[in-house]
Image (tube, rainbow, N blue to C red; front, side):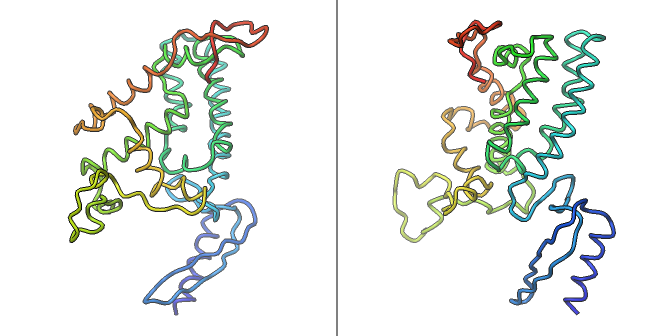
Length: 271
């Protein structure tokens, strides 16, 4: 009966066109200490759930490719609009057409390698140049700072720290309770006064790929974040404001560049 139900579920996934390319996806179900595995013939290499494509390897390459296609269309619209609207209107268009795709569920699908995410960062730099009507090869760090827009790597860290702050301040749904634990709860009977007893217990990750998953990367980033005053803020809105300002303060308004024959620079291009 269980296998029949799984086969019906696989037929439903295929019938509702959850995927688009021929691939075989294996699913495992644990029920009453029994593991049942079924292979479903699907049309895409990933399963779509709430707008996110989860591939079997969990590297989110397929989802990043889908986001890249959406951002490419947004860039085309911005290029057409830059001749018609002023700077403030282009900022609004950037947030509505481009930024919205970039930040949707970012804490989930950003848990992959930067090599996979770099094409999106390059497209964001192209978008910020268009919004500021700058040359195609202009340095983008001052542009990000003047527009008060976080570069994509900082945006990833911002979203992860934002999520973990909600966990620390108990603003997440009950399903996230006890997702992470403190060191002093690992052996409560010992009651040892160690210097790291109040830190989050970071699960061990054997592989580099699993180190990027939320279970390990979120608490690691949280403990490495240097500004303790920002981490102690309890109100989510105030925390978001201070955290964004922290990342913006790290950006340079003037760039000192050593690149030979750089046509637009006045400083080092960190981005």
